[in-house]
Image (tube, rainbow over all chains, first blue to last red):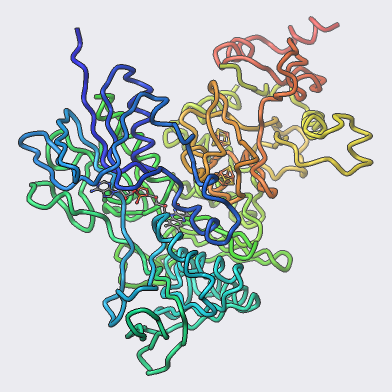
Length: 441
Length: 173
Ligand SMILES: Cc1cc2nc3c(=O)[nH]c(=O)nc-3n(C[C@H](O)[C@H](O)[C@H](O)COP(=O)(O)OP(=O)(O)OC[C@H]3O[C@@H](n4cnc5c(N)ncnc54)[C@H](O)[C@@H]3O)c2cc1C
Ligand code: SF4
Ligand code: SF4
């Protein structure tokens, strides 16, 4: 009889849950254990909705609260504190030692705090965990003014949420414009204006140097110019770093994150990694990268699990993309060309042609091309065509025949179907193959 | 699993499926009532012209009606931050009560099969017709005057595609 496999997963969020679900789907008898230092499994992107009061705590579940139980998966609430690959063992904070046949590192990432004076004062929060949001909410009754450090997605979502709670918010941004990891300057300006119109102050090129105050009370944030922004609360949204503590003392290769190959295996046998912690193939950059995104974490969790089950599955690679709404205005952006060239590596900004249109007020579209292929796009206000543009970009299809209509492209696939049929070897998914076959007759 | 397919040889681009779909997803399920009461939402299938923008139908071009493919694995399900978009017996279903309208799924669906309108709107395989059988099981299939829309597995649909079209026309006379 086949030996029962023992799978251990560290981290029970997007990547961990998706892996656990996949392991169970294909191996009904395996012993699966998930370890998390967080009591419940919830959706991190929903934290800003929770902070704004749009969702209650019980609405943060992206899987049923008894998801693990129902699948016969053990979920241990503890922190993994040691990893001994030579003994195939993980040590937990409660003293337990877990033996594994295959291990998945899905430890995600943690907020990056700038190294400025006073950053560890009470009243300075990241926004990554439910307890962060709860901490902010507890302080809310005493908060008139807040400063958000960082103009990225998480910083601005936090600013919006606090504003909706009636707090006066100032966002301090190092870069020349907001959302510099997501939008080009002119698209970003649209959102800076939207924030200002909604009463949020945005200050760019403002580098914080100190969080001022006493032990119990925050008084303000000082920036490099000496100017002080008085406040009672600080939220830090300056990006995240992969959680690599468990790698200490092991031979597991790391760069910025845990290095994984196209099967999401680490350099040490029987250990895999997925999600925000894993530096995996990036389809646009041509070098491994972390695209710390929910969909990537879920897909990587599934692919890692399939490989842990010896169902050899190649990870196609992730890419930079995001979808978000600020004060009701949606934006989807994808690709590298959208980004201002900066210290990020890869090829931000690279393009040789830009298509741009504002068909009606409130709708803005921009597509970046290089050698007649899409290398980035921004859709503001009307995002319906995003998926179709994204797949053309991801599969590097030459769009020359439809270039004149690209900006008007709706969600309909019909217009570009001939391009897909022409490049059908790049559209390997069963559903695309069926479609190609159907139209081909 | 049963899914919906369109035979481009039979589709004439009349958009009866679009109307039928929009009407099916109204409280009244009646064309006239739903127009009068402004209940109509977006259709969850769209008639498309291969190689041309829709509604600029090239006469003689290939047209077909497309909607959600109920992919497995489904990119939209991976993307969903609330768990609203999920798989259920092979179908891809959006629980609109949970949906927060973040459009992650719209960004990921490569077929443009999701309409972002407050909630993610997509083909739900007509849950209110579960009791029905034959062509009336799905509103769009029932409405298609040329029987271009087909419900079944892809293997079954391939057999349809292998038959000459005339046989079907003759069969109806
Ligand atoms: C406010 C906010 C908004 C966001 N918005 C978006 C968005 O709009 N779109 C998008 O794509 N992404 C968004 N993200 C990012 C998205 O949430 C992440 O990409 C995703 O959660 C990554 O999943 P993961 O499973 O890899 O890691 P994580 O979600 O970070 O989970 C890792 C888990 O492992 C636990 N853990 C770590 N180390 C240990 C250990 N040693 N022992 C036990 N447990 C451990 C952690 O506590 C955590 O629970 C947002 C994130 C935040 C915080
Ligand atoms: S909505 Fe799109 S991605 Fe999701 S199952 Fe349907 S066709 Fe596939
Ligand atoms: S729009 Fe709704 S269904 Fe789509 S990803 Fe967001 S929550 Fe999920």
